[in-house]
Length: 276
Image (cartoon, rainbow, N blue to C red; front, top):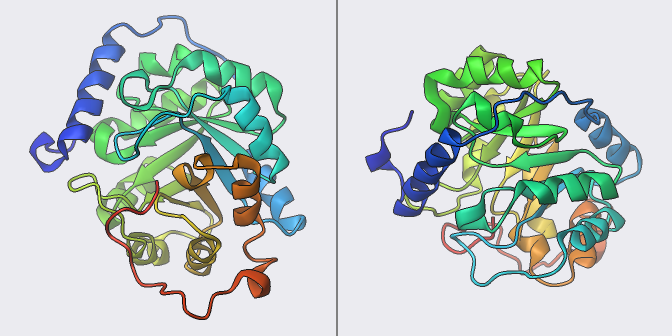
């Protein structure tokens, strides 16, 4: 487990709430027949789309306001925009999520659905069925191998999130086959797309690699793809405005590169207000 003093106050609050929820977690284990995430990425690639996991995220500590739309309607718009998979926030206190939304969204779409939450205890895995669950290496520490095994026993595919090369090594040692590199620093909450670029070269070729956070434009999408991302996980940049159009702009980022290239754009690292 990471030293709490090295985490931003908002992140410490999220982690504390996750531990509290673990105490009241379900006791009956779920059994999942998951939709194949890797196959969904392959279908997107074959169709000329950038594989994007579009995130249904009502709010977050790094965004302003709350999106009140029906999450199922938002999810359907994301799929119409070409999303290969969806991510649904279930953390209630800081992100406005709930587990019921995962079930509703999964019933309404035919793409894989990631349950995005802050799982710190095995019992939390049983809150709801999804195709993929998130484990954050920094939050679970030495418990990662056991939690990864417990998730797989239930049928889940697992996305293991890392922030640096040490966490990547721990994830690979634990047996992770799908790894997400989060560009947002958990101490200062700033975003640096260079984080992915520094970690990606050290990811084994047989691991599916996802770039997370800070992808706010087609240019950002192309940058992460050029650095080795098999897929992108995007929340705020899609949720802010026309969800279907925003999703399509990212999924078509490579196909439409000549049309939307901006010769004056500055692709240098943004470390301040880049979306999650």
